[in-house]
Image (cartoon, rainbow, N blue to C red):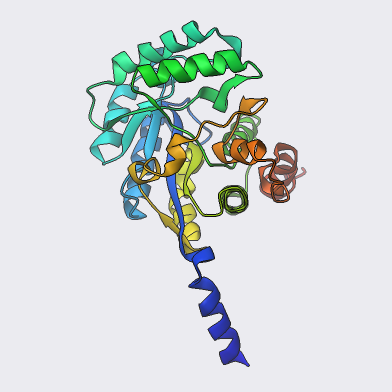
Length: 310
């Protein structure tokens, strides 16, 4: 009986449905504000070391040059250069991180141009634009199309996302807890971080297969956070354990998805979600770990330690 189970598991794990899952890692908002545990300099050193130890050949860091003038951005140019020197790509996340929905097309493109002036010619540069907040114009299709045309004219491609596990929300919870002097269970925090990102990858993989009939090269949205510095190695290990191959950003953005420009009533979020909406594909059940309310509840009940009573 045990032999039969082992053979069945072997067949399942070697099937195309499980064997061709590919994913690249992307980090937004570099240089990002400080988190709960490290200085920005410490975070960069730890993140580069963790990616190297996990044998991640190339991730991509989407940069906001406007953050260099903030207190936490001091030294950010050197930190961004360190990512490139370690073999990672850098790309455009706009200069000041605006919502496209709150700007005219011309204003938004001017902000993108300002970032390009800083980025072009630097080691690791790629001509990719990641929309801040994944906001591609909301309900304003005319603005969406004007920006799409403007980016194409500039030779910039959409640095889209196919999977998003709301790591920024968990980061903010840790920052708030640290500021309030509330101790955290680091093992429970690690577990919650992994659950959120892994379930996001699997959820969007299921949605992509339903929509495309295949598994595309995925791009996971992360941020340059202390949590990534702490747990990215564990995340890569678990992704591989669940059948994922971690690929480079260059490989991911060579996927035919790069030619997809879904026409949906509200341009916002992951490319996989927009493509499913465009084709009227019912998505899988929503993963609990992505929901901010659920994540907050789990953080409160599992990660935060009760303060000892006097």
